[in-house]
Image (cartoon, rainbow over all chains, first blue to last red; front, side, top):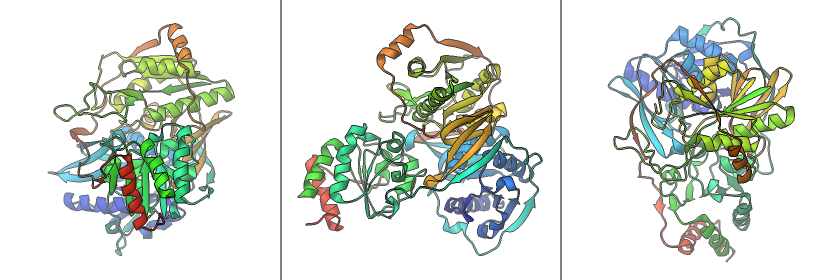
Length: 315
Length: 263
């Protein structure tokens, strides 16, 4: 079973990726692919890659609300008893999966980049320590949960022209008396510039070490006349605004050239930039996962490299 | 108002990480441990709430956690009112591939929070070594409390917490959550404050940390670790050779070939 995610009437790409994978696993195990669609049950038509859409409607489910989603999903799980629940490893996955693993009593693997059936057992490859270590785990027993990284599987097979059967379930009792309510929805700020449309990005990560050092990468971005972007730690530290953040919790970018300076390549970040046409990465750690997606790499120190680049670009 | 902040160390990702001989865990020898970055953000958000409301902030860790004394004394130096180490009566020191399993950690902290309830539990949204899930929602499920993770600000309005929850692409929701509640912090409203070494020393001289022993039933089995390994070295990256000047020449040539550098 896949938990469908939707924003503004659109089912997410990640949902289609999970449906594609669920379909492959269900075929091997001889089962069905089901999708839990909470709130916008009118979107069932977008979930044609599934065999069954389990739809639950209630005003508290129209936007994602942790408590209402969790209660409803527990009801869906109790009624449908899936072998495996797949959730995208984004906000909803980070919010719900661990609570569901306690309440539904199922083993959980997070940050999953591969899922297979090995002699009847569901196995998952999970990334830990910023993607530096992979762990192969077995989700044994009758049930399991995996939160899956975006881009781990292709989405195309998750879309099909055949309509899924839609099963409507009643919302659980008590959903109307929540301990939590949605006060306001904030859309993303436009910000000073749109890094997702840039031809090239100079992007900086934790390796820059301090706010004072930001000057040297700002200078490089200036001489190249391209925007400066960053991975999450730089934005969390307040050295660049949120609108410059590349990654799962920031923006997905696809420039012709992505120059990654001092970025280790945590899964969160790779999800936002792996589709850049040319990735050049500079990191002193030869084990850094960024070199797994980069086309060219160097382990020279960025503090030596960047001034050289500035001089040579200036001519 | 009482705010409890569970904290723990994780291996420093800047250092090389080695696996044990049978590749089922991380070799603890030579590892450097640092406070998890999200826990550091969570402590900052709790201290901002203290600054605004006068709330009491209690930093909590497990006795068996690496570097826990240093982490808790630093939390005190930054402004936490108290720090507590929770010990497991069974004496277990390691149950997962990278220290105590998050499910066991959650069970111990839930027991502590049942004995000494908090209005808000604020912790990092995840830890770099989480394999079997995230602490805040797990704690909330054990305590039957409402929870919100991926929070980027936490405020208080009467008996409710006002929490901003962030989604991909910068979208966010403002939620009103009845307290007590558990919050998983992604980032604080400002960068974590700095604790001068003199203040940390003062905190250490002020006396030992409070230690409490709790006893919990054995946790349910989680995912079974078959093997740990590194990402394929295949990394498609072609490594540029030479000193920084030579590398810069090659990068400029790549940019020039794409018309991004003139001349």
